[in-house]
Length: 138
Image 1 (tube, helix red, strand yellow):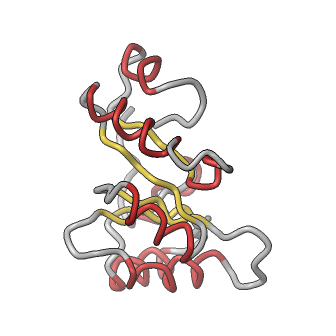
Image 2: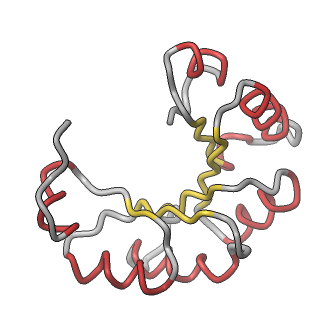
C-alpha cells in the first residue's frame, strides 16, 4: 500500500493495494473519486484511511470502499485503540476493517479481533509476541 505517488506508479511497482487518507483530499471534493477510479481500473484494492466519524461518512458517501484503515484521530486525547473501537461500529457489514493503532500487547489484538477488526498493523519487532506465534519467514 502506498499513499505517495499515484496508483499507476504503485501498480507498476507491483503493489496489490492503494492507500488514500481522506485527510489528503483537502478542498478537492473529486480527488478521492479520481484516486478510487484509477486504482480500481488498475486492479488495485482501494484502502481508505479514516481518522474520524466525519471522514468515515465522507468515504462511504463518495466511494463506498471495501477496505478501511482505522487510524488514530488528529488531536484526540483518547488512546488510539479506543478510537478505532469507536469507529468500528460505523463500518458496514461486508467491509474490511484494518486497525493501525500501535498495539503493544496480545490482549489489545484480541480485543480488536473480538470487536470485529479484520486485521491489525503491528511493528516487525513485536510480531511473535502480538500474534502468539512464531514470526512469518520473509
